[in-house]
Image (cartoon, rainbow, N blue to C red; front, side, top):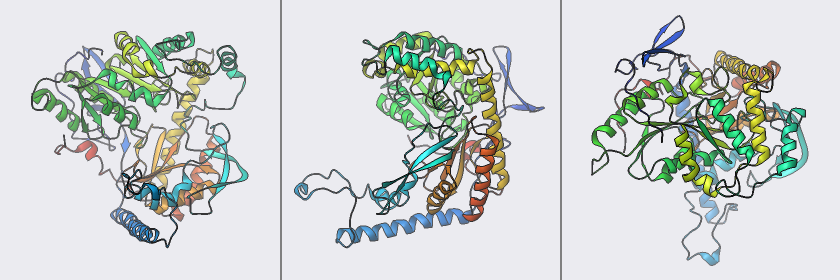
Length: 551
């Protein structure tokens, strides 16, 4: 891996994080709306203020939420009792009578939540789409005759549903038009599949072209691309760290980061979300005490974070994390799956968003599945890092290479954003996305909803809390031809179910106003306007100075 190097910033001291405005912890001095970071290597750096919101729900809402889950659990046990006695038909997977003496393949209690709670609201997920995921899409209508255990299609198509759920941030996932002719040409020349790994016969000139373009886009020495975004994390982290190494992972990291960390065999410790005191305590203890039992120094200390957190809508506090990683000689791995292309003045992610040097981040990871309207991912950074991964990456050794038409789609999208197509339309879309994001968030806040995250994050979680309201919210909006993603446990904490909106540059003001009008009515109907415009209690996330951590 690249050498993290460097010492502490801010004249040898980390910024003070105790005081914070707008529910954010930026730890810098603000003057005339500009945040100034202390000098690094004699050069001043200027960072944007971090404005985030994590407002807590009123007490009665939390009480009713837990009551809702409690009542649902009680009825679940009652229905399981009726199923066991044959009074109610059991539609769940069960062991065959011939295998009654085998070790159970299906654990009855472990499926309790799925069987009795999730199944009641299952119609809100896995809805079949039958068009491109643009600002409007078409959906196949389906109904259930057995309370969501099975579905049947009616043959009707629900036309022109406003898409508020896809990660199509720049609107580049669209129907075919003449701008996609290069993708069609590549398909005719190369075909669809590669039928080999990067180590064997699967490295094409299109892959090399894309990797050079990614490195240029990110302003780094080199990059390597992979066919699957999830595997970019889960298959490459084990190549970077292993036994005797320490991973410090944000508590809200994506499952791909979590899986990669577990597969690596390294010791994993969790720090509170975007909490610099929590992270510094772990770093300090790691340096002082070393490995358990032997107290030898860790071979490597790797900090894992995301650029934009997809369930919270928050943005990583990159300047402070970089300061800590330099102070304690750690490495930094940042997952920009949701931030690359969607934040920053020209769409180059959180590094550009904070006006920082890409060299401050040891491993830059991102995916092409969101802003670029394609699939796959990349790892970028110093050339020696990328050359190491070309040899040791599990994905390069065992996974099929990226499809050539997909590579060309990423190339044309990236050139579009960079302006290499001879137009400024890409930059206009990045700016339009920022404009739509601020407008949508501001209107929701004014209506009285509790929304999470950074004011410039295109991922907008709207808190619903009660499980019954999750189902009602998704169903009512679909009836109004608005497609949203509703999320609950276990993807979120038990009492923090939410709807997650994804704003796109392709959304017109009329579309957003229609959605906002429906949300305003829905907020009154379901009594979802919980906001009291007071600061968050969850950022103990940010302001907490004393806590206990489990190893």
